[in-house]
Image 1 (tube, rainbow, N blue to C red):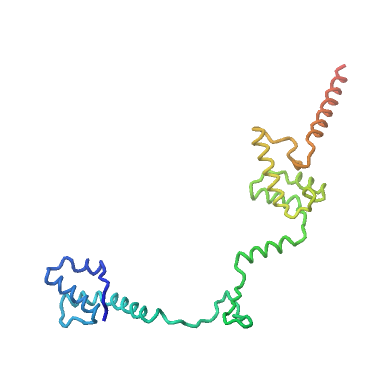
Image 2: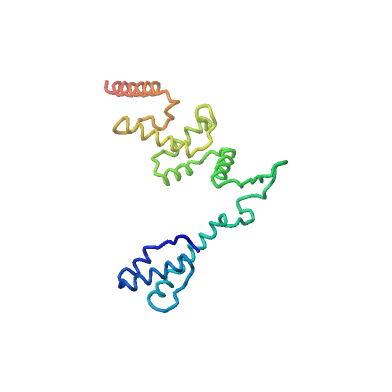
Length: 220
């Protein structure tokens, strides 16, 4: 026996167009079964509506009965695949579950393992292929020559990832293009931070002056 029953919109939509007498009979059939478990004694439209509503009423009554008993009974399950066997602490009634590493943690460990591997300088072909695949306009031969001359050092540190160095190289070229507004700096094949541009400019001016002086001597 229940003190209440849920009367769904779908119940109402199914019977609202019926004549008043049949409408009342259908409502009575639903309420009698929902509150007291009484089924219609005679066939007809009221019994048809009762049979339509019965599965939903039964489900609601089961939930109601489970609620009065304190909820669903507890079940003992085996540990999941992502957990190790439960271990207990000394003098502690609570189990301690040690989960396996998550996927993100595994990825971080893989990155650390890769970083520990010895750095292997790339060949010109490797750099050219990487630049071609990613659309970087970097002179692969100049890149390799430059870092070979520095012992594959980045500042005071040994290079760990030549692909990252290529990306930085390409980024520096784009920044120069943005700053100049036209063409890249004529010294873009040298590492920007460690290059003495003033010295390079002076060398170019001296070279140009010597060439002009040579042309002048030939003319006289």
